Image (cartoon, rainbow, N blue to C red; front, side):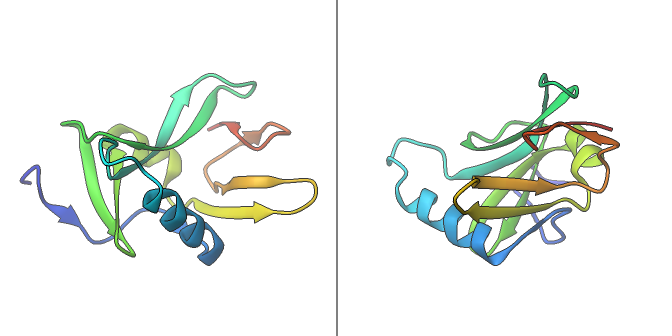
Amino acid sequence: MATSEVLKDIPIGFTKPAMIELHKLRENLDANESPYLRIGVKGGGCSGLNYLLAFDKKEEQDNVYEMEGIEVIINKAHVMYILGMEIDWEQGLNNRGFSFNNPNASETCGCGQSFSA
């Protein structure tokens, strides 16, 4: 696969409120910041893995997907941890931010930002 190829079948989903918030965040990016939205995992947190959601530069091991005008990058090794996950945006009195509904998580911490698979 060519490194510039954009894949069509993104392995995760976003709710409408999450997409609205991501478009707002992307519009407010500095011109020097990366236009790619990175989704993945990293070691840490109280359950072993933390979710990663940030605008970042594309790396060689990333797959590129397009989702409603936003280019999403996911490290090929991270797909197995987030396959089928849905990202939502919550804005309430008790919670404000992105939430992750991950069917692969065998255990999730109370904050919802950390999980084990």
